[in-house]
Image (cartoon, rainbow, N blue to C red; front, top):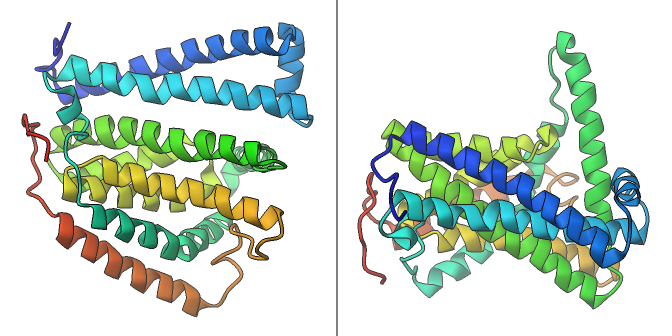
Length: 314
């Protein structure tokens, strides 16, 4: 079965990838739901009621379990299966074989921190965008969906104990960073690159799909910009470890600062940074982000390969 679809067209590989990911999502959502009923001792009817009204501690616990299992099955497993089906060198295909220099991780950590005002500012702009009048019904539906997602996120980020904090670091910080980067930068961006034969088209098309997948219209712009940044990190370095780390810093940083904010250690609400400040803070964020991004590019720049090569680990 190894590399049986290596010679398929990029279009065919894209359809295979979407199909496998969707099948995995349905399968592991089902497995997580059944597992939750067994672990928490609830019936399917009670399960449906909890999922429909996630306002109790039990409902949040169940939702976190379902999220953890379904996300693992949806994002972590399919990329390795696809890489094995598309290549004789699965780790090379996923760009996991190249190890960036350690100094780059420090630059990345600083970059993701200084870029926070810019990302939040883009989110603030995005929140004021409106669809044309004839699409008001669609916009109302999106706004309602956004509000529900925000309420669920707020419930997930409520951390009363250090155990809640550690669990969120894994569920919100680590797993999405690894899984989403494997899928979007490791598989999808590679397919779009082979398809378009233009790395910039591949990066921004992948970023668009990455943002659209989250089904959050009012956070679409900052998430797409972040996806583009992650895409260039991979293109320049040839290593998926850089975007994985950057994605983790972005997600884990939100969890850490929210925990500190809830515990009164800091008075700075991380969601408000860049949204309630003057233009100077945003301008400084833009300038520093560009400078650090350029430093990162220069330290990691490698010739961009259109086709995969059996590269030996560095």
